[in-house]
Structure formats: structure tokens, C-alpha cells
Image (cartoon, rainbow, N blue to C red):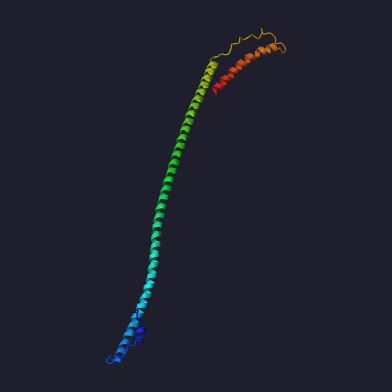
Length: 194
């Protein structure tokens, strides 16, 4: 490429009927001036183009990185979603198993409680039967005691009665059972009245 200095330093040979030297030099100066301006603009545009090419390369790298990052983010989001779904399924299965275990435990406790209630009812019925039997037996004994009459002792006239011996043990023993029987009857009747 021709530089502005090449144009400025260019010399032409002289011939006899050549162009007017002043006009040619004036025109060359105009051409040099315009060419310098165009040449500078061209250099500036080349520098701008190099800068833009560098920026474009950076942007292309960024685009590639962003595209890779976006794909990676999508994959990560999908993995997180799948892991969350698996974790939710696992939690749900564990909760169902725990609920089933709670229901089974509650059912076992209910059966155990029902058995205990049935045993208690049975024990209570037996106890009531025993009480009724004891009460019936007691009532029978009371009726029997009521029906008994004290033995009748014949009254001995005071004149015919032998004189009491001084502290005779045989007579004390003979008199004691009659008193016990009579007093025993009275006590039983008193208890029955209570």
C-alpha cells in the first residue's frame, strides 16, 4: 500500500511538453492531504476492528461459558428435582410405614385392653358370685339361727334345790355351756339385726 510520504516524495522526470509543474504539485499536495486523512481513518478503523474482534472473541467465549453454565444449571436443577422427588417418596413411604405401625400398635393395645376388660368383667362376675354365695350362706345361717330356740330349762323349786357345794368344778362346767349357748344366740341375733 502506498503511504502519504510515498506520494509526497514522488518526483517525475521532465520532458519538453510536460504538465505545468505548479498545477501537478498543487494537485499532489491535495491528493497527499486526502490520502493522509483516508490512511489515518483506515488505520483507526483497523484498530477498532481489532478491538471489536477481541471483544467479539471474548463475547463468544462468554457465550460458550454461559451456554455451558446454563446446561449445567439445567442438569443440576433436574438432579435436584429428581433427588427431591426421591426424598419426598422416601419420606412418604416412611410416614406410611410409621402410620401403619402406629395403627398396628393402637390395635394391639385395643385388643389388650379389651382382653383386660373381659378378664376384669369375668373376675368381677366371679367375685359377685362369691359374694352372693357368701351372702346366701350367711342368710341361711341367720335363718337357721333365728329358727333355733333356746333349750327350755325346767325351773327347779328353791326348796328342793340342793345346797350349793363350795366351789365344785363339775357344776361350774355344767352351767357354763348353757350360758354360752344362750349368750351365743343373743349375740348372733344382735349381729344379724345390725
